Image (cartoon, rainbow, N blue to C red; front, side, top):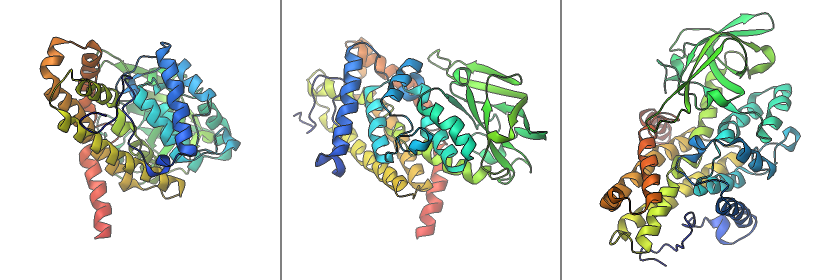
Length: 397
């Protein structure tokens, strides 16, 4: 037991999850966590992957996602009739927490599993569900997001990409940006305008697009690390058949709002920097870095509170009560927490980082630092999230 009261051992990812009520008493939840954590530890020690921060976004490994699919850990909360596991969102939360704690390369299936699958399950036709959901669960349908545009980031009502009605379907014209892994995806989710003018909530429609076709031009964008996971997508008449419309034509706005709650309410909003935090705790605990137990202990306490919020959100989903404001709150606070992890590591271990005494720790910190400017933007800017939270709070006052 360290001076901060956190039990630690030498394993990088063994900073313990602070016990939730459902797991402190043992049972199925604790058993599932042990199963997932044990398998990931064995894979890591065998050299199957190297832990990294932001692994859900940057760690793209199709063969790893296929292994996760074989365990039944993709599409866990969907009906078995569509390839899902018929399990709870709380069970899915346990699996995603362990993937993030391990810094495992889950990017190839993350977006499809996190939000596209639930959206298709909620709004898609039976045919679309049968076509797409089992493929997601097998890690074969890989999705990118076509939401943001150069003039429409978090303000999705300003979307200008248009869908033109043609026989048996639609033709897309326009541009999307910040579409992670679009160059590696075989499907794209596209929010486009089928009527109305930019700035209006009405007239937006969601589409499922085959990416490998004429009229789709994907151009990767290099980030600060020299990696190329962000992309621009240009549509010049790309075709979407009628059967690939998600929900009702013109009903895209309420549907995308619900979808964004899945994006914002996940533990990747609080655990993207977990490998760095675990490494920092280890260095303070073993005395490599002295006299900073209180600062690091504060981060662990904050993480415990945020995990409780994520658990509460998953509980709401299991009860059919998905809440936009709860998801926005988790993302808003999670953004601040993850930046705090990076800054605390700099303050506590600044000279240590410069001297690169522990290259693994320094590598973790550099990666997290370069990712941190995007924390407050991806999934919706902090300003937009604050508005959503305020609107919900006003309704309760």
